Image (tube, rainbow over all chains, first blue to last red; front, top):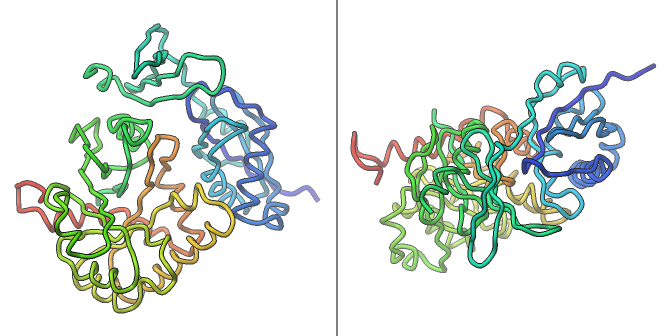
Length: 153
Length: 213
């Protein structure tokens, strides 16, 4: 008999992080197995079914969604990049979760700021949020500021 | 009931400024947060920012000599051995005993618990070890928190819950905190009570209509 499933919608932080679905799956499995044990994770069957536009949908068996949501809170990195997953909602259908997805896009405005001797690109997001991303090719350092902080600098 | 994150480490200790962390905390369901170090803005969006201090000392004399005791809204002192923790629990100027997960199993006993309950000293439960540690270290933290919870249920001292976040990536929502605290048997009602205990402590210590401390 086909088992009932539950879907967990999680927002991926920081905004704009390019996360590979397979890498995210491996991180979720590692976090869940470390927290709950292999037996519990085997029964819960967590899988990443969607990963795009700053959101991820994780499928698991019905009844295990609380444990998997707790395990998602312990994900701290995907691959070599620092990432955090914030649970938004749990539902029985992906369709219901899609309605909860509100893609967050940067406000188009170029800028650059110097912190110490390093140059950082300014990415503004709704809600007075400003991410400073170190200029470079890979593993750039990030700072999380607000509009208020930039005005004071 | 004011839901408070009892400890964050904003920029320059971390990579996120206090105002950004306050914006995120508001979205995550918090009403106030305690910033360690120079907090800067007292209010940012709808989230109140309290100034906290963490003191690491070997004796109570050293704690009382620290100027942060008089400056901060919330004074947290890192736990140590049994005698030190018993002394902390009976010290009026100490609000919270922190880093209890890093102590030995018998470092906070029923005597310290009873004294803490009588003097209104809280014990901090930090979710950072549950998020960042793996294996034996996390098992030890869960074990210590379960012991503290059993003592809290018996003697009724206050608990506080903190994210100990130095970045917005370390902050967690109230619902996620409930899930993480459920790992060592804390109920939703106990989590709510622990999250609101800083608000209660501040209310009791502030004169009516006056400054916080």
